[in-house]
Amino acid sequence: AALAGLAAVAMLAAGCGGDSSSGGDGGYKLAFIQGVTGDAFYVTMGCGVQQKAKELGATVSIQGAQKFDPTLQTPVLQSVISSRPDAILIAPTDAKSMEQPIKQATAAGIKVVLVDTTLENTGDVVSSISSDNEGGGAAAFKAIQQLAPNGGKVLVIDNQPGISTSDARTKGFDDAAKADSKYTNLGVQYVQNDPAKAAQIVTAALQKDPDIVGIFATNLFGATGASTGVRQAGKQGAVKIVGFDAGSDQVKALQEGTIQALIAQQPGTIGTDGVDQAVKSLKGESTEKTIQTGFTIVTKDNLNSSEGQAALYKS
Ligand code: T6T
Image (spheres, rainbow, N blue to C red):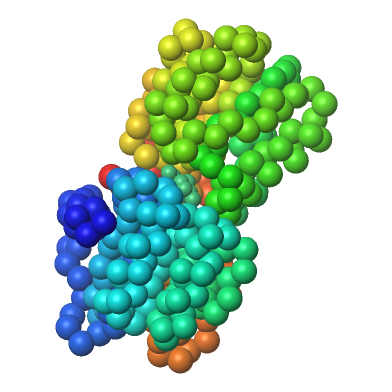
């Protein structure tokens, strides 16, 4: 885990642009724990975290587990707690099973801010900052309605159950799909953040149901895998893919016409807001219990506009 953390820091320094050195000595000591290392979403969030920390004279360490898995994230958190930071920003990888490990941090007097994902019971955390995930899921269905207006079968590719963000996205999508009888939602297939598994599942699903018209991939890795699966089935462009997140692989698939729309979150803003809330709380200033950030729908049409370009993630 320590090595994984170091690798993440090096990537951040390379990809953030500008001076990414951390803030001065003597300021608050912050730690950011990603949902998983090597994910452009958390890399971009880390850039926001570093930028804000520097601005406020704080230092920040960035680390995470190599898989999106609470049993791997817990020891990373425990080692961070024992390094006694003033505050921890963390994206919990399970809404229930990360509650106790996070309680250990707050019980030790460390301020905790949840970024991206949240917990079922947030307990003593300062703030929970996340995208409008349910709204994003509904927006994904709306995009499929526009791309495949005659209706038909749709499929959802998701990481795993129990994650606040992707659970909300599938709910938003499913509720919207239920309201339009032209569409049949075949339901959710879980791929554990593995693009190869997502590709396999999509290829098999297209064999079983060749009339699938649209696929919603709830995050970056699912979208990459879904685009490979659709390409392998020779159905590029015919089956519409809408994916959450806008990393470089997803943008490439958008340019190539395998993916038709991306729901780009604002990970940089989640990171800057996270540091802001942590430092406010450390200074005894008032904080916000929940903060919701927005999203941009990126298609081939607005990809090259300033709005489209600003929405893309760093890597
Ligand atoms: O979609 C993001 C994040 O919001 C989600 O909680 C987990 O997956 C990503 O990090 C993308 O891979």
